[in-house]
Image (cartoon, rainbow, N blue to C red):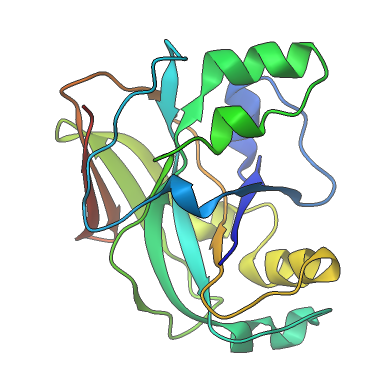
Length: 201
C-alpha cells in the first residue's frame, strides 16, 4: 500500500508559506508507518519544535491502473475521507534551504492520521471539509479551489507509479495550517460529519 501526497494544491496555502504555484502536481510519498487509524493519538516527535496540521481530502484507490486518462479517473476511486498531513515545519524549512529532500519532515511515524472512509458518488462533486483545534475552526476548504482536481491527480500519479487497490492519495491542504501542542484535540470533517478525531500527546 502506497501513500501519495500532493503539495501546494490550494493557491492560498501556497501563498501563506511563500511558495510559488506549481505548474504540475507536486507529488511526494509517506510510508505505511505514517498512518494512524481509528482515532488514534498523535505523538509529537522529539526532533521538531514546530509540527503543523494540514487537513486534506484523502482518496482511496479501488483497482489497479497505469497511465490512466483523466476521463476514466473516476473509475479508480471508490471512497474518500479526511486526513492530516502532519509536517515538521522547522525541519522541512531547514532541509529545503539546504537543497535536500524533506521526506523525513513529512513521512515520519504517525504523521498521517486518516478518518473513516465514506463512498464517493461523484468525483466532480464539490466537497467542503474542515479542521477544528480544541473545537475552534482552524482550516476550511472546498475542492472547487483545487489547483489540480482529483482526476488530474490520478492521471498524473499513474504516469510514474502503478496505482493499486488500497493506495491512498492525500490531495492537498487549504490555508490555515498551524502548529499543534500536547493537549490539543483535532477533529476533521466532511461537511458536518466528523470522520476523524486525533489527540496530540
